[in-house]
Length: 556
Ligand SMILES: Cc1cc2nc3c(=O)[nH]c(=O)nc-3n(C[C@H](O)[C@H](O)[C@H](O)COP(=O)(O)OP(=O)(O)OC[C@H]3O[C@@H](n4cnc5c(N)ncnc54)[C@H](O)[C@@H]3O)c2cc1C
Image 1 (spheres, rainbow, N blue to C red):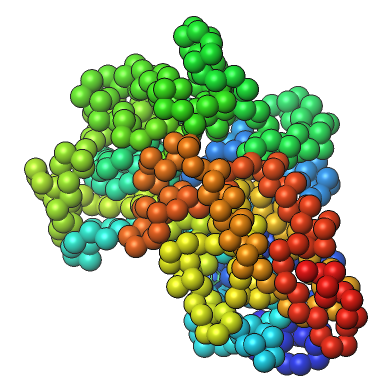
Image 2 (image 1 turned 90 degrees about the vertical axis):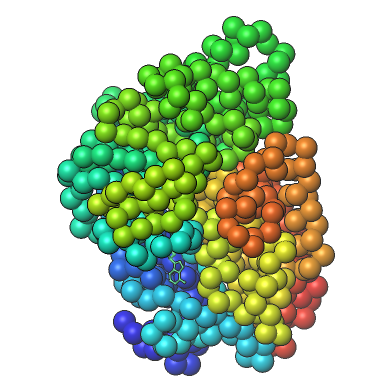
């Protein structure tokens, strides 16, 4: 439906109560919750289908790295029981099928305008409405905007001289062609060895004639130890699904994983190795970092985990020189995203996989034939870019958001990306940033964090409907305090020692600030629940004349 034909409960053409941007897991759940509120709403999605991350990242080897049974919605017991995950770590097609199933089962699709990119979101203080403009030039007004645009959805584009001159095929993991690509017999260069690069490389190696991996920063990656779920395990898990969900929400990560309370150096070496081996064999994201209390807090503790992983790399990779190049040393374990892989290090034992260490031999340019590094030009039929994301803030700052007084969100966040509870920004009334900065976001099982945010927003909207509040925004003082509270948690940890997308340092010009809230999903839940219970402390409400005067004071 064209946006200018959106029905409205305000009786005014083109006016919605709520505009949702994005139809990934966050936007989809937001739609589901809004359906029960009586508010008018519509979602706008750049792609032509639901699923977000899993709609775009179709590269071979793409999988979740939180177990499928946990990386799924918890809001419907029926859904939980009827959906059958086939593997511990589902592939992208399976997760996308799940997203489509959810969209059909809960009739979400009819509420989304697809193939529609929002390029501007501008606040009008007089009417207290946002105007959203699409890339086609259509516009729609809405009282509230829920930006469900994804913490890992704004891609980081490669900035390498000569990129446009390449005569072969150029592919990006974060927008892989929908119909796939036959790479059989091709000579492929892969640039980037973060999570996506690590997943795609072993699969490419199976089909290509030759794969050259251009690596600037080696990752710490552990084997996913993926497996097909057997029926008995699924039945047993599902019988206790509610219990598992509640337990996961009570942890720091939103995963069924408890951080062990002892410091690493408080036990002997044999016990440390036993625990690290257990984690290596279990293939559970976050396991090693949780094996002791101080892995991301103390460098000596951290080194014990890092060294264990380095030993495994030396064990797997037969060529000692290649193994040394694959070993991460320049940053502490866990301070960049730890990856789970399927056969990554093994791939370097193949004769047809080569590693180029860009620290020693940097890329000079991309040529029509391939890639020229300081030492040589290598010819490729295909270049695959797995260059990552402008994480957490990128998809919000690219949305063209202009708040009160004509202030742009990208300017406000240029030095410090502040958002009260990660959800609301002072000066940007009635705007919600799902999995935004200073919330657990991508430091957690993101599905848990999405449901937490969407539920909270829905309750706040309900509260505003009940109280007649017209606008809500973060109190600048509460926003500042929350930002400082979140920043204080990171001080004294090892995170700031790494250049990472958590620190914003992968994007030129981005402030060097730790972006997610590291206090844990559990502590964060307690905080935002308490805020709501106390009448939304830290939020400022503007109550219309027709509403009850007393409510305004209560709302502050
Ligand atoms: C390869 C990969 C693997 C991952 N694996 C895991 C995992 O195992 N566990 C985990 O917890 N997390 C994982 N993540 C993080 C993942 O992004 C989240 O788990 C989750 O899917 C995010 O959902 P979302 O709806 O918030 O955002 P997204 O899924 O990113 O959806 C956002 C949507 O907004 C749309 N959009 C953005 N801007 C605009 C605009 N201006 N106009 C219109 N539409 C717009 C996008 O097209 C997109 O469809 C992974 C991420 C990637 C990239």
